[in-house]
Image 1 (cartoon, rainbow over the protein chains, first blue to last red):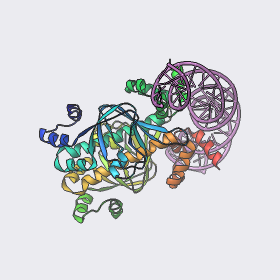
Image 2: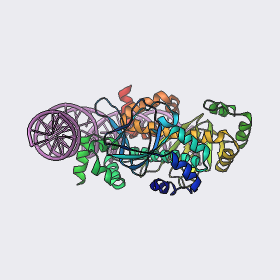
Image 3: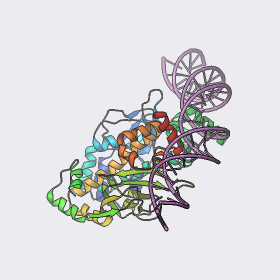
Image 4: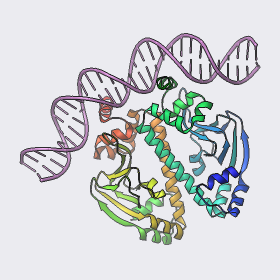
Length: 188
Length: 188
DNA sequence: TAGGTTCATTGATTTATGTTAATCAAATGG
DNA sequence: CCATTTGATTAACATAAATCAATGAACCTA
């Protein structure tokens, strides 16, 4: 759990008292590979810190499905749209590896907002951070080639490429598995 | 200014007292067409409600520039990344038509957060909303063809297409003006 | 471990878009 | 109001990726 506090303290100073309230709500859970953490239509009830694992976000398409995001160790995972609005999710979240999460429920988070100084700052920071990431993604999709996106991902998340099927990467960078195969051939 | 209150009251109940504090900070300003509201490198100091006008967000590229977003009447405009973090903006914001804004400074917003019940809710809601829009955009860029994005935009913002150069639309949907021209020919 | 499934790669063909260049129309500014 | 600039369209050619199809390798799982 120290891992989580350290992660937060990169951005905020947290008092021991606030940390006590916050950490008391966290519940540790383990999931095996290919577990569906969130299904389309369900309302997300958790915001979770990832101690270990890789997650993928996807929507169903006619044939294959479309992987539009990943989450990794030391980050957060949640069907955030659904969580915030408490409406049914439009997408799935699946574990790609064995995963360990520290989970917070929607209700507990509201309690943390009420009871701590730092809660709101963290919540706001999380939203802002997600917005920023999506902004970067937007520019990446508009501004760069599929090949460049693959190389960038290789740079940022090399372990991802070692651990999960390439077809998910292909989908994420916006091409078919065949096209990614050719990109890889071209590079090597 | 009633326009703004009505806009907020779609999502929140606002007391007259809170509205008094909020609205006292708003400053009305007019800008002519092609005015640069925010330049790359500047720190954004405003969050503005758009009474009237169309704005475009862009980054510079080698040759032409890349338009990645628009803002319209009854919405908000801000170099939000820069505003939130108070760091230099990586993009430009430009008026495409004569524009009327009601502006709030960064400092005034902090004051509103402190002084009103509703401030934080609105601020959070704004961040969440932006995140949601970027999520949809991500899926649109991954999941749909340029032609479909054009048709969607035609559906959602028909007035946009009547008022601004097509080359910006082309950039926004992720193709060259020549490609958009072919798409339009194909459709008609 | 054997059999079936999933995955990555490759090839051939088609399609959409990029690039370069030219032309015409429309908008703008002195 | 005219000259210049800017924007939209079209064409020809090049390129990247989609699609359809086949194959062999890797991987589950009973």
